[in-house]
Length: 541
Ligand code: OOB
Image (tube, rainbow, N blue to C red; front, top):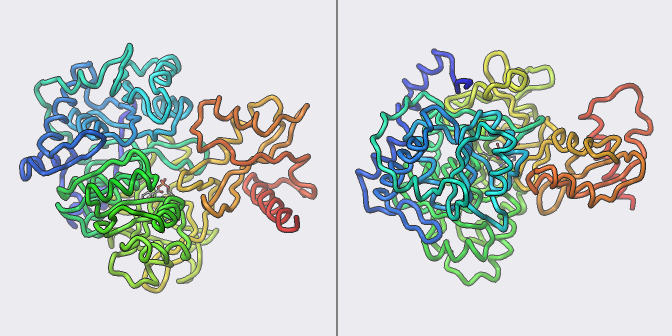
């Protein structure tokens, strides 16, 4: 098994420790501490479950012992594929306590993505719930064990069928292991997949706990905070900005919403007196629309965070008046760096910028094509390094060579400007992925699947501006032989076992890509040209 690593050069690690960012805390350790301080305080509300800190702590111990009883040994990786249910927390805290390493998958992921994560992480176990949103995850588990036999254990919340019931783990008791070292990798997060397939992001206890502890402070969280998880809990934004872990760190309460839809989330906000939540821009728009006819008491809501994709100033301006709370823009990435507008920033900053980094030790540079810093106030590529930004992906030298500079800066792929006060404004991006309502789709990944279809001669997938989703995906296809129907190619992507959000929103057949192509152009230029031609044709139509 390839060891998991995330190392900063010793002089940086020493500086981050000396500055008090890395305090030697662990996930299992901080939960133990909160449970000792306030055992009866409510920690997690999800479905029928209402767990206090003592209850969550006890369940985490049982689940840790249960995983070890299955024969898993510390250091092994476990793909966690759960939706917004309370068992997500007993699972991941159980894994942390057992020294096992969760690999976070999103509910929308299907066999192709899950097999890719399981192979990349060399996972030996897979945790699911029986069904969610009409989909049977046990069927996926069977396929996974066929495709990746190294996944020897499947644990199921609910009706387990031939697999191990989660209830068996919850009933376990056994001796506990010492806490892992805080500088060890605690879990693997999934990259948005800017180029090619998603990469695995190793995050340590030290670096991740710093990011959500400092985020909680920026967001004014304390033990009275109630965080509503409207987005999928396994995504980095609701997980740590300050999200569920920031909330549990400060002794607050996490409320899990099974859906971000206003008719589900609004009654939960009223019932649980939710104080803060986070959404992607299209959902924020939906909430604004729903607020006009809303009958639920949303007066407890103090902060609505919006991030994952660019929020337009027009929508941003409406949040405060419509929902009676403060808007906070969040511009972050699973690789590390997170920027926030501060709650007491002037309205102009909150509406028109994506905020500034968590820490003064987040180094941010904005460079041109030649890698030289641009004059202050001009747009350029955002590079960053700091106390919670990774220095490398797991076991991927080619991606690492592309994504990191020699002196350890992460190339975010985002094009930004910096205002004189130091706030960042996202202008666009350098990489060819589609940001569809906050979900990132790699053009290359979808093109490769389309090219595998016998009726496709060539394919180019591009983002098209969309009033609701921000961007939608459009596949330009040069057919080969008889032209297939667009619906057939969409079904093909589904059948290939990919997440539904990766199915192209639109399929356009063309005879050729570039009528006047002179010489060889890059895929990136080709995609840009196709997008421009498509948009120009629509305007004149
Ligand atoms: C968050 O994380 P990822 O890893 O799914 O995606 C990161 C990318 C960024 O590089 C940027 O391209 C885009 O998503 N993005 C934004 C944005 N927030 C993220 N683009 C414009 N405006 C924003 N506010 O999406 C993520 C992770 C932690 C916190 C928040 C978002």
